[in-house]
Image 1 (cartoon, rainbow, N blue to C red):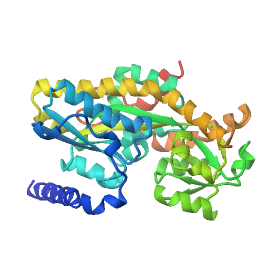
Image 2 (cartoon, helix red, strand yellow):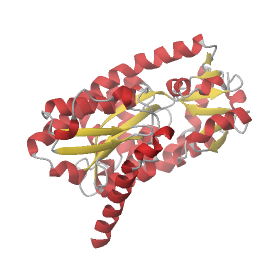
Image 3 (cartoon, rainbow, N blue to C red):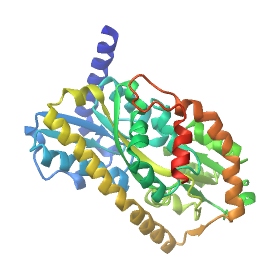
Length: 359
């Protein structure tokens, strides 16, 4: 217990030191002036620091500022959500550790990185399972299954409250990819996550695991000739300046899971905790409704800039789905694993979700 307290203290000191030095580093960090609150947060009794790696130009990331404003309104200025996007506090793995130890209170973690502390969250990364806006809505509508999903990090001292999105995953490439044969010529940059690596190997492709900041240069230099991501992200981060083609396979949704330190939530007075939780739920639900329109608008903008979009044939799509079975078999045990506080005690969570979504 003493070691844990020392670790928390060290993290708090590190975060504090970073914030103290922020003015010195301001030239290297994007400005948040555009998203300043229209209220003075100094009077708040409780401060909730929340991190995210992405730009608020992503609809799912912007939810962080929406949560800030809604929580402030509903708690009458008692809780200030200090939202820090753009990886201001560091990469997702290190920030996950900060949340777990209580050095900060929460984050909008990508579904890909979330499996580091909650393997069950990996269910939404499996190819062709939660692969459309309609299926995502359906999954969320089943509170029994969705609440079990959100319990993925409970045993780590972290509560999942809700999710937002940033579109459908596909392939941005430097040469046209109209079929599987074309795809096998591409060196795809994929996220640094085991499930993605296995999926691409099962498809017979050439995955290159690479940190996101290295992608633009790697594309320009030909180290990679494609990347796995969503159209909106590719447009906003200027990947389409080099990769002029996009193949819409829509095999998974890009998601942020909004997670918070359990002990911090429990420390709030019951009435404020209720307002905080309900604010997150309501903002996320409203934000998700914007995602499909936001993606369509970004696709239209990309097309106007000369990006060409393709879709694979039904036969090729069936092949990819069939070749994805190995990924399911590999990760089913981790996704299905139960923990002491789980109320949903089915040993076949993955199969339950598959059966429900395919009804």
